[in-house]
Image 1: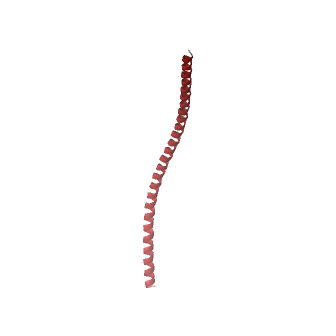
Image 2 (image 1 turned 45 degrees about the vertical axis):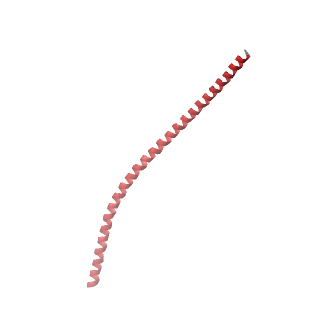
Image 3 (image 1 turned 135 degrees about the horizontal axis):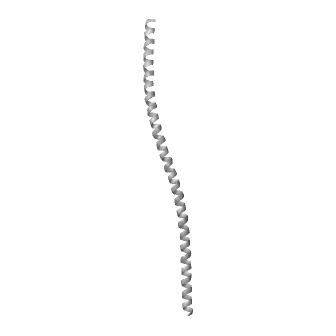
Length: 96
Protein backbone atom coordinates (compact mmCIF):
# COMPACT_ATOMS: atom_id res chain seq x y z
CA UNK A 1 0.00 0.00 0.00
CA UNK A 2 2.85 2.39 0.84
CA UNK A 3 4.60 1.56 -2.43
CA UNK A 4 1.45 2.30 -4.35
CA UNK A 5 1.05 5.62 -2.48
CA UNK A 6 4.71 6.58 -3.15
CA UNK A 7 4.25 5.65 -6.79
CA UNK A 8 1.17 7.89 -7.08
CA UNK A 9 2.89 10.75 -5.22
CA UNK A 10 5.85 10.46 -7.59
CA UNK A 11 3.52 10.56 -10.58
CA UNK A 12 1.69 13.56 -9.11
CA UNK A 13 5.00 15.39 -8.72
CA UNK A 14 5.90 14.60 -12.34
CA UNK A 15 2.51 15.85 -13.52
CA UNK A 16 2.90 19.08 -11.50
CA UNK A 17 6.37 19.64 -12.94
CA UNK A 18 5.09 19.00 -16.45
CA UNK A 19 2.18 21.41 -15.88
CA UNK A 20 4.55 24.08 -14.59
CA UNK A 21 6.84 23.58 -17.59
CA UNK A 22 3.88 23.90 -19.96
CA UNK A 23 2.84 27.14 -18.27
CA UNK A 24 6.37 28.52 -18.60
CA UNK A 25 6.43 27.53 -22.28
CA UNK A 26 3.08 29.21 -22.79
CA UNK A 27 4.35 32.42 -21.18
CA UNK A 28 7.46 32.34 -23.36
CA UNK A 29 5.34 31.85 -26.48
CA UNK A 30 3.16 34.79 -25.50
CA UNK A 31 6.24 36.96 -24.97
CA UNK A 32 7.70 35.78 -28.27
CA UNK A 33 4.45 36.61 -30.09
CA UNK A 34 4.45 40.11 -28.59
CA UNK A 35 8.06 40.67 -29.66
CA UNK A 36 7.33 39.38 -33.15
CA UNK A 37 4.36 41.75 -33.49
CA UNK A 38 6.52 44.66 -32.38
CA UNK A 39 9.24 43.60 -34.79
CA UNK A 40 6.73 43.31 -37.63
CA UNK A 41 5.51 46.85 -36.98
CA UNK A 42 9.09 48.14 -37.01
CA UNK A 43 9.88 46.28 -40.24
CA UNK A 44 6.74 47.65 -41.90
CA UNK A 45 7.69 51.16 -40.79
CA UNK A 46 11.19 50.72 -42.22
CA UNK A 47 9.71 49.37 -45.47
CA UNK A 48 7.41 52.39 -45.75
CA UNK A 49 10.37 54.72 -45.12
CA UNK A 50 12.40 52.95 -47.80
CA UNK A 51 9.54 53.23 -50.31
CA UNK A 52 9.21 56.94 -49.56
CA UNK A 53 12.98 57.39 -49.92
CA UNK A 54 12.96 55.60 -53.28
CA UNK A 55 10.15 57.86 -54.51
CA UNK A 56 12.04 60.94 -53.31
CA UNK A 57 15.22 59.74 -55.02
CA UNK A 58 13.36 59.19 -58.30
CA UNK A 59 11.86 62.68 -58.12
CA UNK A 60 15.27 64.16 -57.26
CA UNK A 61 16.89 62.37 -60.21
CA UNK A 62 14.22 63.73 -62.54
CA UNK A 63 14.83 67.26 -61.22
CA UNK A 64 18.60 66.86 -61.62
CA UNK A 65 18.20 65.71 -65.21
CA UNK A 66 15.90 68.64 -65.96
CA UNK A 67 18.30 71.09 -64.31
CA UNK A 68 21.29 69.60 -66.13
CA UNK A 69 19.50 70.02 -69.44
CA UNK A 70 18.57 73.65 -68.69
CA UNK A 71 22.02 74.62 -67.45
CA UNK A 72 23.68 72.73 -70.27
CA UNK A 73 21.85 74.92 -72.77
CA UNK A 74 22.58 78.07 -70.76
CA UNK A 75 26.26 77.14 -70.61
CA UNK A 76 26.34 76.83 -74.38
CA UNK A 77 24.75 80.27 -74.85
CA UNK A 78 27.19 81.86 -72.38
CA UNK A 79 30.10 80.21 -74.19
CA UNK A 80 28.87 81.46 -77.56
CA UNK A 81 28.33 84.97 -76.16
CA UNK A 82 31.86 85.06 -74.74
CA UNK A 83 33.35 83.87 -78.05
CA UNK A 84 31.34 86.50 -79.96
CA UNK A 85 32.28 89.23 -77.47
CA UNK A 86 35.96 88.26 -77.76
CA UNK A 87 35.75 88.42 -81.55
CA UNK A 88 34.09 91.84 -81.38
CA UNK A 89 36.83 93.10 -79.03
CA UNK A 90 39.52 91.74 -81.32
CA UNK A 91 37.83 93.42 -84.30
CA UNK A 92 37.53 96.76 -82.46
CA UNK A 93 41.13 96.54 -81.27
CA UNK A 94 42.39 95.78 -84.76
CA UNK A 95 40.55 98.73 -86.38
CA UNK A 96 40.75 101.03 -83.39
